[in-house]
Amino acid sequence: MCGIVTAIATNNVVPVLLEGLRKLEYRGYDSAGLAVLSGSLSRLRAAGRVAELAALADARQLSANIGIAHTRWATHGVPSERNAHPHISGGLAVVHNGIIENFEAIKSSLEARGYVFESETDTEAIAHLVHSKLETHPDLFEAVRLATNELVGAYAIGVLAEADPFRAIVARRGSPLLLGIGEQGMYAASDTAALLQVTRKVVYLEDGDLAELRLDGYRVVRPDGEAVEREVHLSSLSADAVELGQFRHYMQKEIFEQPQALGNTLEMIAGGGAISPQHFGARAAEIFDGVRRVLVLACGTSYHAGLVARYWLESVAKIPTTVEIASEYRYRESVPEADTLVVVISQSGETADTLAALKHAKTLGMARTLAICNVPESAIVRESALRFITRAGPEIGVASTKAFTTQLAALALLTLALAKLNGRLPEAEEQRHLTALRHLPVAVQKVLELEPEIEKWAQRFASKEHALFLGRGRHWPIAMEGALKLKEISYIHAEAYAAGELKHGPLALVDKDMPVIAVSPADELLEKLKSNLQEVRARGGELYVFADAGSEIPESEGVHILHMPEHYGMLSPVLHVIPLQLLSYHAALVKGTDVDKPRNLAKSVTVE
Ligand code: HGA
Image 1 (cartoon, rainbow, N blue to C red):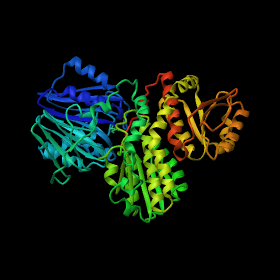
Image 2: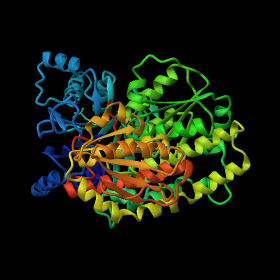
Image 3: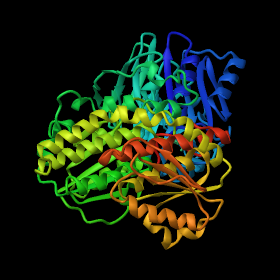
Image 4: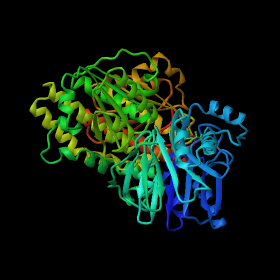
């Protein structure tokens, strides 16, 4: 959340800063701003989108060789021009991603010294704090180092000072930040996508690092001032991967990229590849040995992936599994068990609650940790003993789609790897699962072809205010994911229930205005589900049923059926989520909401 860009170059950096912000806009889009030095400090800020800031910069014909920029997702203070970054103190400007937990204490002590605060943000405290340090330590780099040592919380910052016009300072702790080494200058940004326009050579900063960016190079130091070397990586991300191409929205593009994303994620088992612990890292066989239970920690859509995996891990690998919302786990007193494999799932690998939950599990003595993330050098990956990198490619749409299905693919592999280690995966079974996994991209492609029918359903949905999603067994989390998608992007209030729970309360909500969406695969629970659907129909509820070829639910008045292909066994949840993604996408289109940037949300939740 919140995106920052910093640049110092021989050419005009304003277009680079703006293009960087466009690429980071998925991280926050309630306001945007930039500050550049060209003789003196100029700052531009706009409530609203990056496009509005770009128009202001155009009108002013702003040009400079050094600057910082920001796109905001407000945590402290309403989204407004006054609260938009950069924040200024004297001739010094700061952009910030994160939350400063002790900002009130810092603010009071600075106010006592005469500093006047103009915004409601925590960030402004950083600007004044750095400025105050300059009184005793005139070196900007040193002033930033001393100031950041006093900050409690999470930050990635970029700092510029009028009195020191040939360098920009950046620092991070908790929030992501990387450097870019370009032909014409040095850059920093919250993620690689923002820098592909100028370079693919990147340096990932570690927690606590500070860096000075100059035209002729950079240096990195630790919080105590000691210099460190950080490896230079060549990003394999292509600029095309973050372009919209022929699609109307990133969400649509990402839904349709799922066959390819799954194929890439499952590449290691293509051809003759077998199930192996190696898929999870060199030390996986040793770490998996003796695992007696699994604890999955995740948030949002990733949490739903974990819930599906619980059904798989218990039924196939016979390993007791618990799935917890990361923000709850980190603050609750729990009983640690050393023979637990802690699996953390996060698209960005930067989700603050998941990262904190992982660290919490480790402090409780649970050292067997596995990250399932889509971003290789992310904080969660670096914090975990084992890793599985899903190869979904950049996910820009705020509502997660391809990250979810590739997480499911990773979790299916994990289930099979643990089952095999425990002697619960006979050779013939392994081959059967491998065939199903290899065929998965094609199976997903077939479901995507149902889009025109789903589009028609979406027309009817868009006028509804509420919707109920039902599922059973491993498809209950899919119903939850469907409800989440609908809420996120179409703002229709949706709830998901395990279908057997209906009669214990939610049935009271059912009437002709409450559409009920049922995930109805032809699995072992189908007959039970059919009875639950009868209960709905008997109360006048309108049913929208996503059925497999073998479900045999007849279409009748008030019962609409979408016929999906053959039932896909264990992996059926991967197929059944696709029409629900499409349904919410098309409902949002009909309603005219901002699909890729839904209100109040942002991607990559780097704040608590
Ligand atoms: N706390 C700062 C930055 C917010 C942020 O990083 N959000 O993801 C603010 O509210 O402006």
